[in-house]
Image (cartoon, rainbow, N blue to C red; front, side, top):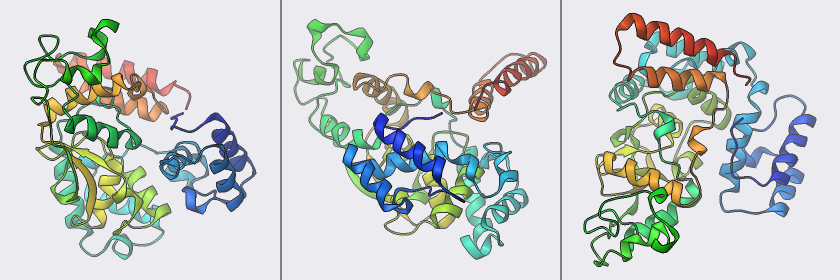
Length: 332
């Protein structure tokens, strides 16, 4: 299963809660019983506790979703290739009423807008995405603003390198920008700002409708001040987001004019991806992006990787069948 940045004792508290919960368990921190909230805070009252708990509950309490029939098809309906009529039917199943009553009479227009954006995404496989957690973003911003990350010539090592390419004698990777003989060349003025979700663009070509509608059904329609809007996403100069794709999709279907708190980094997506991957590795997040939560997640990853395959169609289909068969045998 996916893991968040919770202490082991915090995870044990949540596991005990799920084991004893009658009916549908809470799926966000504020809905947990007071005794559970207090117990979690006693272990560690980290800044991202609400976010971490919600992520853990989503990943571990899915079997308790109210509609078991929908759960069986989890992570199979991608916005990019799911027709409007099918999306409307799926949404009604999650909401228990027509989609217009929840997401407004302009749902069709908003869905088509989201679908166009997803189809146009560069489709970066998740395994290639940087791992910079929300709790890391403040430090990431400060170190970019101070020119500590060596991203612009002259370079300390002759070119841009990742953490694996330096030794102890080179010092911390996140300090190379101050060791290249030009202390101000690497200053990148990253800034926090609210950006309308309709102006943002996804980097991943898979946005799952089950997760999008499931979150809306459980947490409500996003509005100003919602946690999905106030949890920071990283945005490139060409308006691509690095993470938070399902928060983005929920906000898009609610109102494309809603603003998400964003760390705007004045670098194009190609450069930001390279720097972000190296930065995540440097601060100890290497390898987290490779974790697979379930067979459905693995199948999704394989489909996205196969899209890059340049082999003849018959060979690609045979490879696809073999890999997806293997994925189906992964224990959730």
